[in-house]
View 1 (cartoon, rainbow, N blue to C red):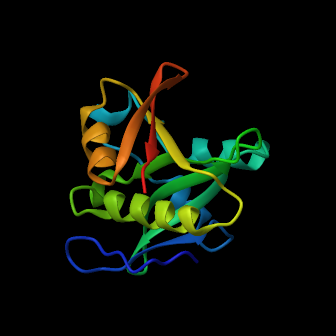
View 2 (cartoon, rainbow, N blue to C red):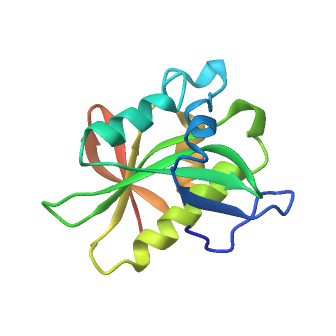
Length: 157
């Protein structure tokens, strides 16, 4: 479990847990709002398959209190040592209470403290203004690079 003491707006602790036999179905069933499907898959199950079939990404369940509310994943770029955050998907029923913000903060804080990384990065579609605002508010700044047509942003310490 990764718990950095962050909470949602209602005061529930937001922690990240390994996806396991007890929670994988709840994680897989998480679905975004319809208007977010240009940026994330229809179900978090796609991210679970991606992380189980490739050696790049590590999936985590996002819990608010004791309830699975989403998915987030991370990876380490072996070429430059940076850590990446990806696959952020908060179930539509749980959006708007700060769970996504707390989840990204929790993972970013944990990644920054690891000894095996040089930076924390993520990417988002240029037209995804909500993501740009969120990541900027959390201290991520565009690097000027692109990854698959997306803006690459890095956490500045």
